[in-house]
Length: 122
Image 1 (cartoon, rainbow, N blue to C red):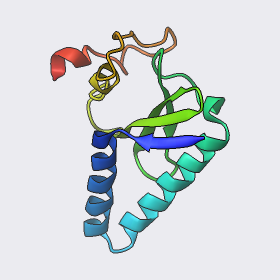
Image 2 (image 1 turned 90 degrees about the vertical axis):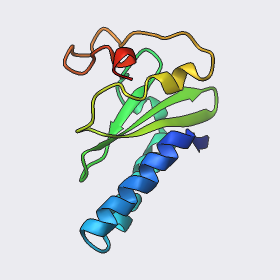
Image 3 (image 1 turned 135 degrees about the horizontal axis):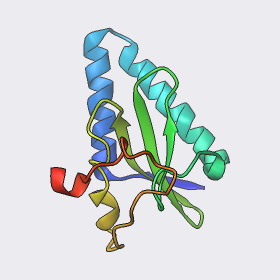
Image 4 (image 1 turned 135 degrees about the vertical axis):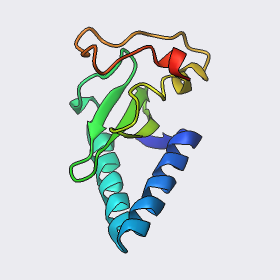
């Protein structure tokens, strides 16, 4: 399965690596290793993680407060966000709309605390 990162997801990844490396030498590399391991798990079985919205799934990292938000199209996995769980939820949703797809509401199982009107938050 092919994997690609949305340009802003790639920037989030780089920023987080740099941040953790500044906090403690080697911590940025540990974060990167964890993301690589998560992406490897996603490639093996992309449907193993629960739906997050109607078009995305979320895989949480084990050690760091981040989620890998992704969606699958045929044999291609796109990482939409490397999302800090302490950031406002849904900030990345417009990245899905860049592909000219209509906005889709969260899945019925999503809690209201996870979703606010992210489109209005900017």
